[in-house]
Length: 397
Ligand code: PMT
Image (cartoon, rainbow, N blue to C red; front, side, top):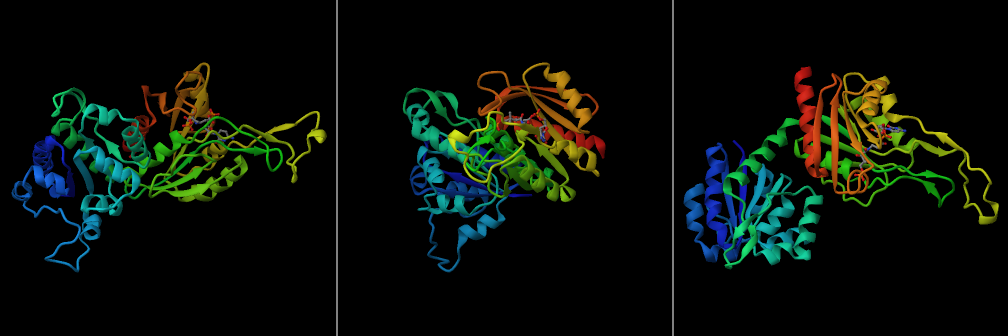
């Protein structure tokens, strides 16, 4: 049995929160409700008291127990925070880190996965500010159950209707399960590009944004793993809880990865490691007039291949960025680098692969079994990847 905290904010759809609460209880979990002050004006907290069997929390400071710091104590016990319904206001507060009531303060204190089910008028939901807030929270690993299209409390038709309680409960239970499935495992993920320097200011690199690798790391954290993220230069916000190691050039990434490889259980190489570096690197900026006629390139060492040669029971996942013969080239890489799984993405398509929010891939395991992952967000693809890794680990045992 886990302790689930259910945040209820002031949307007319908050009556559906009763069904969400019941759904988690039916699955055998204990539910503690936190209401915002405005939500408590719409419906009496007594309703949630009697359904949950616990006193609903509203105020940050409890006059009966002025010495206790309830949001910290509860944050340590919570296995999951679900906010359903979530107004535009609470989403904005979470995104900005405003902590001016119990629920928003609790959000900052809790380390457990967070699931948000928004409910609001369509214009508010589609407002660029709200979209921005949702994106920021997603990038920090917060999960969303998207609202449905339909009749809204304001009389309009459109997006913004609270998702069905069954769907919210299903996703919440999935997150709880994910939390434990990789518990006790150390996962090493690489992400982003590398930079091969010609001199202190000029370098050779590629278009990798780091998004794919960061999502893979985020999902592993959600599933309870200890995560080491070796990252090339990116603008992505690292997932909270990951041990972040920055590496600039391929040789530096190799050093950081090899150092941590012996103590890792699973390695996912999503980084786009440069295949070439300059034969020589100047210590000082090369003057325009002094630019050599030829710039000699030399191949970098293949980190993944070295891992394949050195592996002692580690589960090794590589990526293959291909523009032609995706499957055939991925099959060659899985053999030559002794991989357990390869994620082959076609990087020739617009809006997919490098520096995009979406991706599409073929997942091929060492036995040649293929999973086709059609176009989806990198967030979703990271779930498909971890499901495939876990399935392979399961069948290996
Ligand atoms: O970062 P994003 O913008 O989100 O984009 C994601 C991505 C397209 C970069 C990602 O999905 C991806 O495909 N990453 C691997 C890119 C790549 O280098 O592919 P490759 O086919 O050249 O290399 C095959 C594998 O060998 C990769 O796992 C790579 O990390 C590894 N490699 C390559 C070269 C090298 N010197 N050392 C390596 O370990």
